[in-house]
Length: 194
Image 1 (cartoon, rainbow, N blue to C red):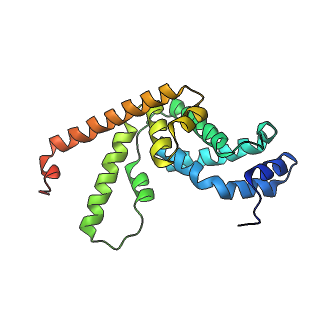
Image 2 (cartoon, helix red, strand yellow):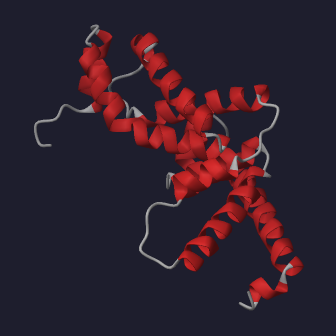
């Protein structure tokens, strides 16, 4: 990968109309855009649509992208804006547990019982994440799934660092309460009596 052009070089090429540059940027960044969209929407179809829309916007608005700056924050911003739009239009806003579990649980060599436990736990966590407000969900996904700093998230969301910290704090608290409530309702899970 020593000879691969930088994102900035590819953006300059894209601004000149080079669609191969768009393809290279797509291949380079599609996973983080899709993962972010899926983490926010919990809907594989919506995440795929957001992925495509994000790169269509990159093509359409390439002239607005500053090639001297990192591209990833721009992509995250477009992705979160598209996810906001999806959340406003979406009537369900809930997880499709079958779809998200299928995405998260890959092939393993563990016992079927272990796989069921892992699937149940992931479903429980994703259900708790889906119960968050869209603002909390976006911050949680960007922080934990994409390992972005609070400052990076504030830049992407164009809001103060304090707002990101507040959303992260309240999101964590809501997740903790939701997950603790489930354990209290099913004490056998807390003590491994299943």
